[in-house]
Length: 163
Image 1: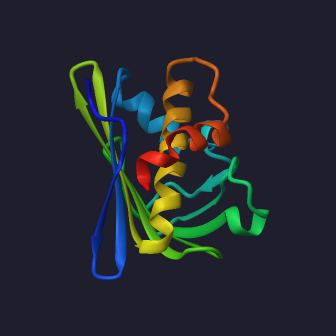
Image 2: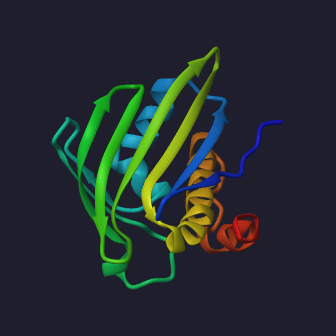
């Protein structure tokens, strides 16, 4: 059984959250779920993406109990390498600038997804980690054609693993 919980690492005054998930789906299917605005809207929230290096990305996370302006982020795509790497720098009102990176690797019929969210304030990492955990659980449910867990309930269930 693979670990589903992410890790938080500290470097100076910044934190990085890393998750590794083993998904029983072809890499192209996972890539599409991570990058297609229609699919992202289901598991993460409304998203617009210009699919190229230098393209814009705008998201509004659905689930967190915060005002919409706090849940919104805008950024620039730094790496667009289908179906292997999708990385963007984003800026939001509550945490400033961070980098989000999705790395995908095919291993037989499984896709290994590595999510890295770097540049976080240390004080924000403990809240962002269970948030990403909940979003990744929702992504897995979408891929598995199962009902998506409620973000708030899932966050509450895993929050203690990150404190």
